[in-house]
Image (cartoon, rainbow, N blue to C red; front, side, top):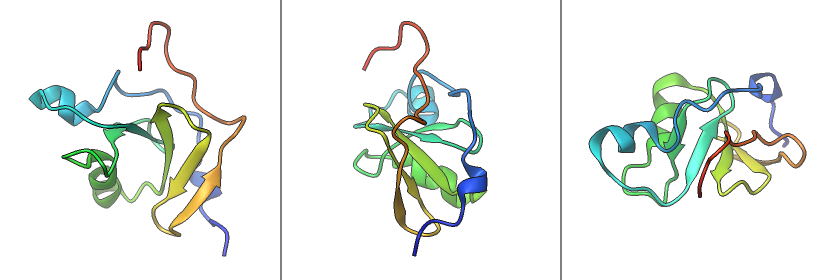
Length: 98
């Protein structure tokens, strides 16, 4: 069954130049995920703190985009479906480094 949460896929401005919570506490991350509802930048589930998934559980914002590195796919937490975001990825701010 395809993802039914496309209305939550918005053009957003990234909230930070890395995982917001990890930057605040001086922790590291593996990859970044961008919330396509509000722009929150969190770390992936391979990272020690898994802030992107915690953001979903706190907000119920369903769709994230791979952000570091950008790979052209997203994930719907509710439907547990990958999404093809090729051509719809969020650009990185000037000076962004991976």
